[in-house]
Length: 57
Image 1 (cartoon, rainbow, N blue to C red):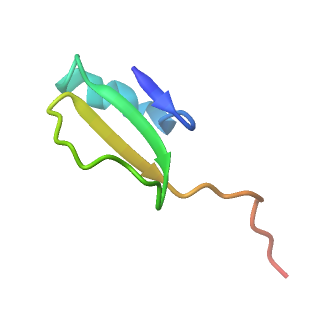
Image 2: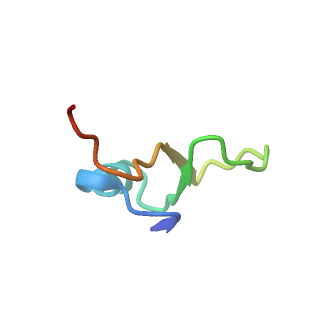
């Protein structure tokens, strides 16, 4: 299931696993260095993490 730096938000992992029940899901920050090998069972999700809630003003 989900591995890596966080969780797939809003049930995204369930949607992926519905179509690919044997998927190995990796959640990584944008710009992460990854291997270039091709694996049919791997799904990489790149996320941009907000460190602080934006404020107006």
